[in-house]
Image 1 (cartoon, one colour):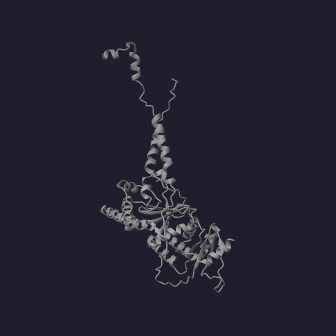
Image 2: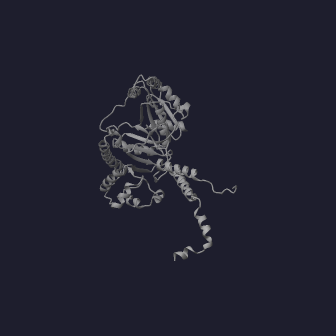
Image 3: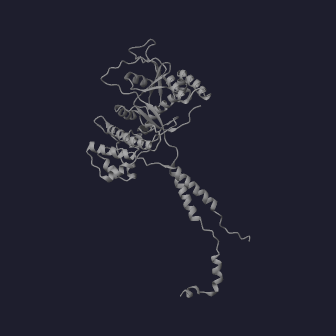
Length: 211
Length: 215
């Protein structure tokens, strides 16, 4: 039987031998198709940058049973955030009915440009920024260790001369505004950041400014 | 002789293609499908998101979603929550829950939510996790989530210690992160932050996208 199968056409013997001697090349097209399909899939679905986080330590909630005297803040600046604007005043807050030595508090407006908040904070927090510059130089010259550098930087930030920042928001402020401001504060190396509730009279001041 | 074949040698191209495929396969971390799209603000911070994380998402409408990264902790958390709110879960539902991403529904809706296909979850009309003073479910999620994540972190720490490393126990403690939308009103975020602060968890992290620091 095998003979029959083989002897189908004796005259084709030559051709058969030639066919067997075909090249060793395989048609790679389907494999390439598949490879590129997978490649496209992975390129499109993968995310490379892991999300970053910015940490912010909130002050602990005061014990309601304990009466806390409102602290006198010397070197502070208070930011008031609303929809897309940002106001600030320095030092203590004086309402209209109880004006301080320089009269009631007046709000000033600023913005998120490099000449706005960033310059304001850099000027006001020059003490810490200068201190940091000095530390940076010492670190570069290897006069101090990394851990010493960090400790001294924290000391600078805690110093009474460093700027403290309070943030108050009204009900129209967006999260973007808030995070942008925190970001600016981190750039300016502000050590003490306290998000606090806005007072009704301050809210009135802001609303007057918006109008 | 001049009758060259029309096929080209594709070997180098295939080599390259497979090299790239391998690279992307190994380098890729998959975006888990979240029930909401959140457009996060940018900051100069370059701190990478920690491993053991408790995440609260706030979308632009102010809806609140909750997520816990560790699957073991999620199991423990769901058990505790089921006991507290007297909602029964089947074994299968618990297993599904441990591998779910963020969720934003009330405890009562949760069994139905778990059964749902992932695509339906995106279109679901939920109000998020309630956090008003009469029905503060978010507080319980955070409270029990913190306990569960602390426990799982402790076991992970012990395991790392057995391997002979000298790990920092703080690396294994749960970190509290907030993912807020750019357009969300800050008051919504403040409500969530107040829940954290009520539980005396004051160290919060905001998820941001990277931005170049000014020189």
